[in-house]
Image (cartoon, rainbow, N blue to C red):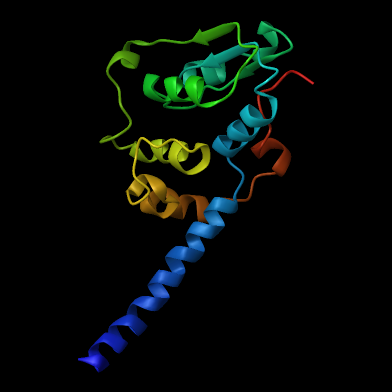
Length: 170
């Protein structure tokens, strides 16, 4: 029995090391969720206009239009549930205006249980959202294996472009 356990452990060890190594590499990559969390924590006390919503707001609304202290916290596939999380999670003492974009899918779409479920993971991993357990797939980059392999095989983005926050203030 001891021999079987030892062989099983030795067999599984390379796989475990590969998964842990992959997780570490992916977590070290710059991404929009890290940049957003960092900007909201560092400059949240200056933000007076916050833009929330899905990709329509992310790509379609330029914070400069709304003034110096506007920040676009929208994200691709961001649902109302995560808009509410962002609004309540960060300290925004000067916040006066919230721009919330709505589409027909805003009222019924959820990330969980869809082919793009892994988008919800960024809120757990990089922003501290506790909607999902740390033991769930939402706590691990490698849980979404197709995305995991795509990220590993993708060229490394330039640091300026990858972490450039949509912040217009000083």
